[in-house]
Image (tube, rainbow, N blue to C red; front, side, top):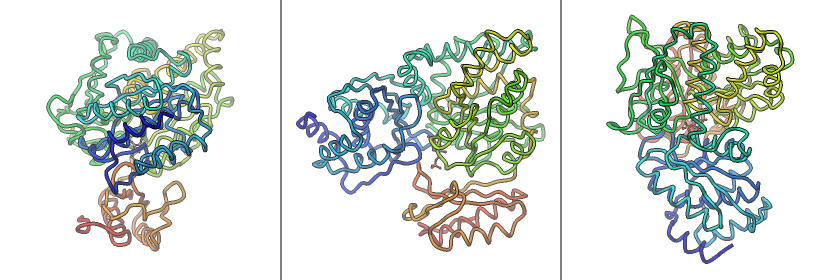
Length: 543
Ligand code: G16
């Protein structure tokens, strides 16, 4: 290691005194002005990780759904997954090391993780449209170069596009071409192939209004437009030319507030959707003729995809050969879980919040559908399942079965299996709705969501809340879970839980019950319990 260079460059990216940051749900996130040293050091970490696994690693500068003033960094492992949890601790150690200790910490990581510093390193970089992202990505480059690593800067890309590039690179192109063109070509080709199989393809026309959260999604969808025929009409709203990123719009806003985004005029029964700030989440919605807003969140997306895949697997008679499951988190609406288990008869697993946990669980199945209620999710196919399906397309004599296998094959190509991807998920959904001849209202009517409410409370230190049972029960502070249990008892069909956010400095509260009034009342009462028992800041929450 070039100690001199490390000292020189780390002095250019000083750590603000007394600032401690933790690796959260999806990496580091904070106010952008606090992050320069973190991203420089994550450049170092990415180079170390690359040397350790002898593969290309990805770094994305983004704070996704957070306000424009925030920023953050997500690290991508060789097959496009999130950074392996065993390295999160190293990331936190590096981010918080005193400047004069940095070299010692790097050496310790090399010892613990068996990193040979003489090996090559290769890192792919991407960034979102935040004003602070460009400068921060330059600091990432400094970190990579200090450890002698090579980099490729993709500039402005969606987070899932960067995950895709990393996977393409490390599979020597088997997953696709590691270029934006390669991504657009792969997805648009699979989408159009699927649409061709739709019976109504003659009069096929798709209109969809898309709220891009004033973020990177708008830019990338515009680039993708020429890859689609004229019949596919994607109307882009909130493209970032007028308003701030994520401000009163985007998937997180729509999900949390259960109302339409600003900047998008909705006519009755029109199908609309929202991306988040880095385009890895999507939710759908529409307004009925009476003017009521209907949200179709990640749970209903998972349900639609599961119905479709299960039917196709049955057609190719692979239902018994291939195990399929859905992975959710505690935020999943109780009625979605019931529908999947009891009506669709698909096993459902609940894991902790964070794509890394869902992704990991979904890898256990031949077909693993995972979605967070907030719209972050995808489908994973095991190697064996993929091989079998591709073989059926080539060899199956029965026309109907071969057609179904072909649809599955196109779904495999259309789905971004590295991570949740708003663009890919949107195309998957649009294809399924077209193939099944379903309207957004039909889709919504699969089951009725239990009324629910999401709230946030600020506390002095959110880490006083520790949880267990996939975050469904609080272990600390003492008395909090007992209080929640007593409150839940007061309402019918009720459920509530609290957990510290890993992306914002808040405690999140979720409640559901038989009526919206009761869900709201329960969420409020639980938020008061959090405020009083977990060290609430400022004034107590108001109903
Ligand atoms: C990230 C994670 C998601 C998670 C969300 C909220 O999303 O990738 O898995 O659901 O944060 O996490 P928390 O409740 O811990 O704040 P994004 O889209 O912001 O990157």
